[in-house]
Length: 404
Ligand code: ATP
Ligand code: MG
Image (cartoon, rainbow, N blue to C red; front, side, top):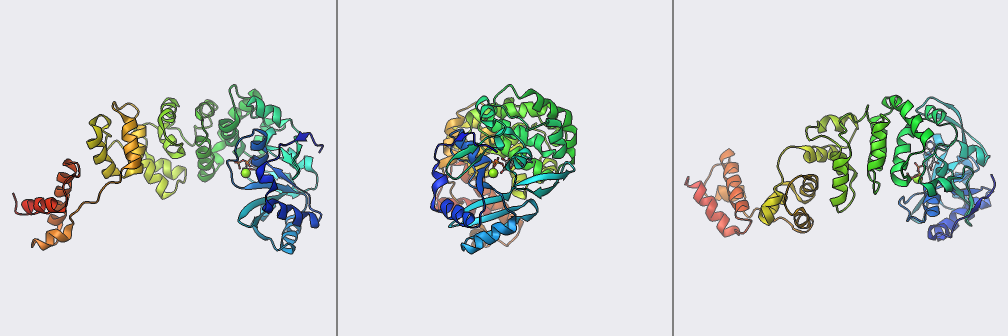
């Protein structure tokens, strides 16, 4: 593989940690090059979004681990099956993967063999701009002219797209994910057509992997075009048949204060979607599934036009973050959603100043009536815009307890 240029020096390429890492590998005759996201983002002069730095190395994992150990650097065999070792150097993580070539592929996992041929390793990567390598001094290797594709916003498979998808069907999802982050319309024709032809095989993937790709796609600054293309290719048919289009997603993105992939997912689903079923299908965590459920539930309706008092009542009921989610998704509700959002991000709801214990002190027996009374006081307190302090709340509790 021949050098094809130079990278501008990057701050992350010359840290004490990187120097310690390369020095230790060099002492064991290991050649290491930066690869993948870190080089790609450097070429684009984008701030690095991923913290982990990927490196390709020309010796097998055992040699790498020995080289690191003799320099007293910590390593973890994170993915020995794929030839990956994680080096931990003074708090920084580096993923070191031995050069590979595919021996056998069944569309889901590949049997790989190690090689010392850099071009062979480049050939098994997915997209032209994902096969960019850089030496520690910035010498750049770009065997498939990925830089032109990056500049043009073109996500392009290395080699024959159908073959590459047959080797690993996850690449269809990666295609749209990378398009969301690095692409511009129109999509690369042959790559897109191959994704369309192969969309039906996506059913064979696992929910976790699909969800991971989908959420990473949705996290991109402007993912709507990629998602739309994904739907047109039929790549959402199996995993997200509920998809309703990107109109609400675009509207949400125009108003959100920070990108949030799960909230954006809610924006591409119909209001009647079965959040539980989607959570199960995509193997979302319990927390994610619950949040999705709250975001899609028909109630409570967010009263945006009701002004600060209604906003405070809503924030108290849902909690700041879920209220903000529902507010941002209440795209058709009239009212000053901006002011409501500022409140949701800044106001800390007070705690109800009375509790069941206070009811017992009034001589009530423990039981459901106590709960009902406290709830009634709470409604009264919310209705008064949280103005009543403890004394007034106790008086109201007593009044209600007397059966007034
Ligand atoms: P990011 O970390 O920001 O997602 P990345 O390009 O580093 O971007 P990774 O998933 O970390 O992506 O993978 C590192 C590199 O490994 C990729 O750049 C690509 O060259 C290669 N790669 C990863 N997954 C595949 C795949 N399914 N098929 C082919 N090559 C892949
Ligand atoms: Mg990476």
